[in-house]
Image (cartoon, rainbow, N blue to C red; front, side, top):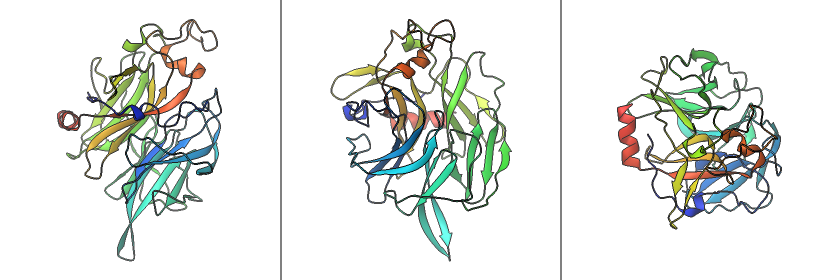
Length: 324
């Protein structure tokens, strides 16, 4: 299990929660100059769908505070309710010279730049399979998850006309009934083990939300044969402690993205967050009571959505990765 440590209070909401617009996690990139860049879709107040603006914020510290200047955005085709931005930094070899490239993946398209600060240009003639991508650059190829049921695909290069081929299925054989994993993030650790971490939920849970299902973990030794962490062990939890002495119990935190520093160490996880509801849940609401009640996971549709980041105990995380 990922171990949290005290997080700077600025990390609770990376986009100002005084703005009634919603955000729902984005892509976070560290530039060559050490500046952190977050590209985050901005949704209308009261909505988590249909964003056409990708806001660009910068900070000198990964946990913020971030500056979000007016006009610093990327205009994008409509971003659906269930498609979150991800990023991949990779090395491209041109005429014998290696060049660092930055990519943003969202809305079915890939955007490329020579700097973390942009400008990003859509790669014409190239799309990726599925929604909510989990892109990975590994051993010179690009992988992504088409969906948790459709499996993993691979392509050799990010160029117009490049084709994706099926690489592996993701076994759900050991996933308990009623566990619904979504929002994958995929990486390969230093021992060449593959990992997929997910937001997970159950629509049967609407009370005592601090104990509700929140996350799941799939792992593999080769990226081909996948296993599921047994029992009720979840990789990340609801409650975060902050350096100002406060804490917050998030009713749901979703779209997890792992952040690895310049040394390849896993130091933070950033997520989409319901910034309003706590353990009490929202079961008495009727608008999203499609199951005879409104489950903990659906409180977000009536609340203010934001983007949060959590600091991790790196040594414990590294040990956990060795174990799994």
